[in-house]
Amino acid sequence: MTTAKPEDAVAPNPEGLREDRILGGRVRLLQPVEGYRVAIDPVFLAASVPAMPTDLVLELGAGVGAAALCLATREPSLRVMGIEIDREAARIAMRNVDLNGMKGRVDIMVGDLLRLPPRLAPATFHHVMMNPPFMPAGAATPSPQADKARSNVEGEAQLADWLRVAHTMLRPKANLVLIHRADRLEEILAALQGRFGEIVLFPLWPGGNRPAARVLVRARKGIQTPTRLAPGLVLHEPDGRYTAAAEAVLRDGAGLIL
Image 1 (cartoon, rainbow, N blue to C red):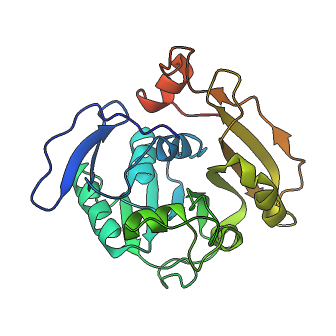
Image 2 (tube, one colour):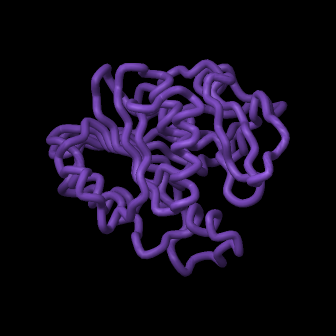
Image 3 (cartoon, rainbow, N blue to C red):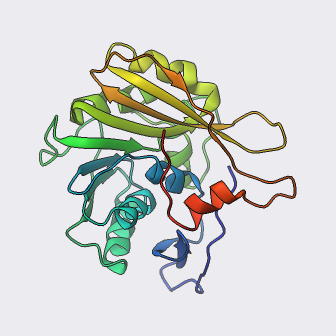
């Protein structure tokens, strides 16, 4: 997936962090110069959550807070809680919360989704969103940079664990939204079976008649409605520019209806 070009950036500070701006400059984002860096996936993930004012959202694997901050910017009245296993990433995420003036509305905590902090009560959330590691454990050589390895390759928690925890944390009939590799759809659908319904598959087409590498998935806990394949969204024009529909999400903060 193409890395998002920040609308603005400043030189790295002594801590090795750089401030970028996403969502048309409305979200300020400190992130490491070296290691894992935010691409466009968290922006599309946040755009796909059908959140309403006063909803409570949980993000599993919050990273430096990009998706949580994009969602909170799009819907100013909701609250987002996030859990992140990487202590340094969670620390940067809370700095980003302060940087964007969202303290009290966005809260990122350190924690392992296999051993959730007690303050996260089951069956509490209106929505759970996630951008899990794309590669199964053992399927790729992990990056020597620890944060990039954790972001790209599954650790102790495998994809089925992420989906199981989401089911536990959601209220009945509430929404799960995730973005993942299209070639793992079979695994995703198998893990959702019997727990979720009204599943919507929303491909992100790169353009040029190429197959979709990424897909957004929305599902509702305890619903029996059949699965639906949506038209999806084309990301790029023939000359490589983002399409107007992609720009509306990435720059203007538009939501996606899945």
